[in-house]
Length: 193
Image (cartoon, rainbow, N blue to C red; front, side, top):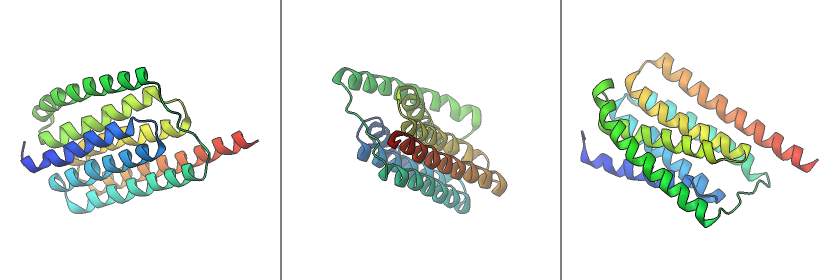
């Protein structure tokens, strides 16, 4: 690792992903906010320039904020999961965490990026992928896509520091947030009718 202090954001990403995989709405919101702040900003600001990191942070935070505001107004329930399913999620997350550490070590050699960025990005990628596979409602799917994309942006943002590319990344994040808000509101309107 370049700096050992970066184990703190990696631990926050790991805890945020664990909270993100629970069924409670508050824990899902809190976990995804931890992931975007720890992954999207605290790691990327160290290895890329300030302006692209701030642009990605503000666009991610505003997209998640729009999604969560539309979820707050809805009556979408995050049902409690059975104990067996919770154990299965934790086992799958541990497997993905081990896989992301092993792949992160190899990815640093191939892409010439710091280990912290590779492992943090792969944590977020695999967490979004796992949540995408186990989600049952549209609101959870949108959140899973956003967390998955946050992991991709962390890795790609360090590789490419062009203003145009980072502007396009921010535009995609904002479009995902707008699409997610629209689909959640539409889902609520259909349920009310």
